[in-house]
Length: 308
Image (cartoon, rainbow, N blue to C red):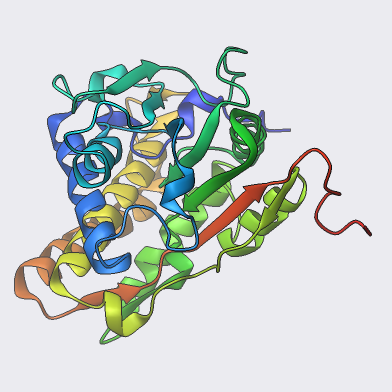
């Protein structure tokens, strides 16, 4: 029986954790999501910003760019805005000069937070963790995220879901690439189909989902910037599959087994094809990012789904 993957090993892009290229990709992805998916918004319109007065947390904050934008766009020039705190287990990615008032803290969000943080945040943001956490890890992060919120506080959660991406025009090799990424996701025990998973996890906590899933449309997100970041991410995820296929028990093998050679060549060919279509512009990627907004119930309210 295969052993469960270590939580620190499931992140598909772990081989780029301390790479400036990965930091650049994270910042570019943030910019594309903000403009191409969210129409320039950082906080979902269903969340009243006037209620965000005490503290905001960003889990898996990466470089901290989302919090920098929050400070510069919503609370620029103010000394009385909410406390802005980012948590990530990889401090090597942190911006060395974050916006004033932004605090970046090394922390594995699958682990409990210090009690001083619990119940103190008006808004907790989560984004792009689908390729970093196992199902078990995700469930722990959600549980800890809800605990961070004050009663009535909001959770804002957006993910990448390759099953919701489409190629224009559709090509067999793009379909094969997406299938290979999803297979790798299953082998690492990452979260299943995200819209269903996101609702299930939130309904199991003391929260009430209030936003919509799979926001956006293929037409609004089908543009060059969105397509470029999706294709780049697809290549990186395929490369993670290539690295995994070359390894055995976490160590690179000296010789590739014959039955695995064809798989390696197929993945490499798919990566080369993605490079070709990125340069030629012959294929554009469109799709949606699943997003859900939830509000932590007040202690006096029943759990979502219970009778009043």
